[in-house]
Length: 371
Image (cartoon, rainbow, N blue to C red; front, side, top):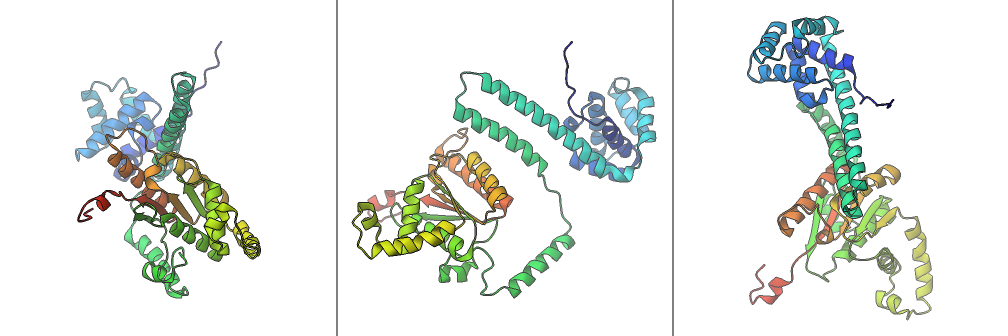
């Protein structure tokens, strides 16, 4: 005999949600905002919820009589248990005032069922020999991320609650020294104008090739990590981690990078390099040099770094070398999708994300240098 596992669900919670909706208009409002029909495991409960939702959307009263009649008109009253079952729902609910808690239980069980279905789908794809590993990983991450995003759906907040938090933030800014409220860049003029790199911001640094974008970004990373102990995550798609560290070592030691590349160092260069090794080795800088990293993979790695090491700043070098999901019509749309994903990451982790962007050299070929 097969040991079939029943998907997780809570019958009493589903019944309590529906019973509360039959008894209280406030419960209807809460439940319709928090749940969808597919969140219910039992088909009969889905049908009842759909009918209640339809009555509510049509501005019709919701109670035992109106719902019973609506189910009868739809010829599904007996399928859901009849009028007797609806009465039972109203009689067995502990209290309609706990509707939000009942909804939370139903929602969490539904999310677990979706996770089970998704992992089963991923397992099937993994067994398909025609699926490439990279595509499989990207699709698996996308599916899991969609479930996680549904869990993070935000509700409305009353302005009074936001005002208190805002006032506290203003007070902190007032008491802060130097007027730097975000991550310091180490460039005084820039910090004065921006008050530092602000959490949840996506900052684009755009310039043509070989104009110093990477050097500028690495200077910001070093200043933030070494001088201010801000954990920095660097995603380098153009240069290897060894090349990045070599450039940072040159900047920190004031040794000419050409001399380091060629090995033609002077005797006095060695002590400077040795002194620079100390602060660099202790700096909270973390480098990932995966070429062509996708936005989904980058977000997953950034989340993990935030959880394990803390994260105060993300730097990406550079935007155009990232890959999207591959379901867009052209590269321009793909870059737009990647940019939206990075902005969502900045908001999710509440850190500034600095993305370098390469401008085309085409304007240089025009007589008027028109962009």
